Length: 169
Image (cartoon, rainbow, N blue to C red; front, side):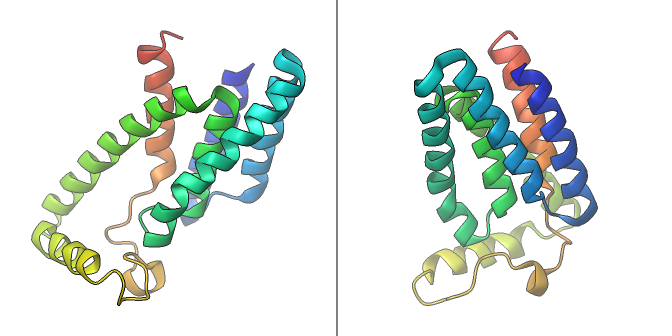
């Protein structure tokens, strides 16, 4: 049942992300509610509590990445849906694979566009001046989408790889 729910959530999240770089809140809320219902059915009150705990912890852990502009709020919330449905242990596996995959995709994209050195310099400048600069590292209005990566498809790929190959699902 969890897999069917996640498949539907990921289809809508990926479609939205590819169309306009946004994952809509109704998709996320549906995932959260499904996680609460599914886990309540299997573990009663503990399932409800643990699902909400995983959602909140995921959002809190992802908040600094969102504030720096490294990921959108929808991406962080999509991770919270996975965490809410499957728990933090599974989520950590998905996130680790996601980070590896997103890093490789970013690296390849920057190499192809011959922008690796300039983007690394910009990132180092941002890190060195993090207390002084009030703006985020990436701002779509300012920076455009030339170097942006839709993360929902990468999250979906990391989820399915973890589910089928790491977990043996």
